[in-house]
Image 1 (tube, rainbow, N blue to C red):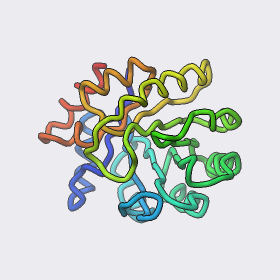
Image 2: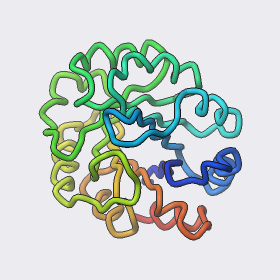
Image 3: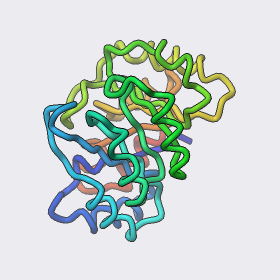
Image 4: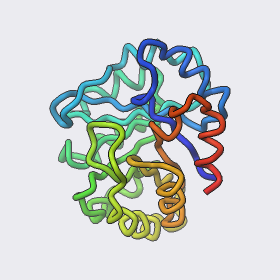
Length: 213
């Protein structure tokens, strides 16, 4: 069954506590938290304090996606705040083996994210350090963008590279009923969705529709 990870980037920021409770009731599988610093991407969201404040309201895994420069400076704080998975961008830090090992030492699962123009060859020497690979199917920084079709081939190639390893292949960006089906057919295990989950207010129905693929 496809894992659905709603991105609270599309949630009501004035009511995040209740948004988390609604997602919990709607049978979401994970909560995706987009952390943006205004440098690595042209947007600014929130930090560890918000993650910590939301942690008591659900037992769902917190899937923390660091779209930041120098992620190694932040991983400890997000681990303490309640992150279950911490994903860093391959483009943001040259010492990926080191930072992925540190994430695991902190008791979290370690993920790597690839921007649309980043080739998957960068994964070759870090596969044994990974619990999750996140393929960005839009250029990161803002919600509501259109899915980039060229990423379907990348998803398929990465799925083959994963083989029998216990690594979740996640896709983030422009996910809707159509692109969800395409991403899953290409090999995606998990889908990050913002607008497609929150639009219309019936979160359970929207999540179920995405999970059908």
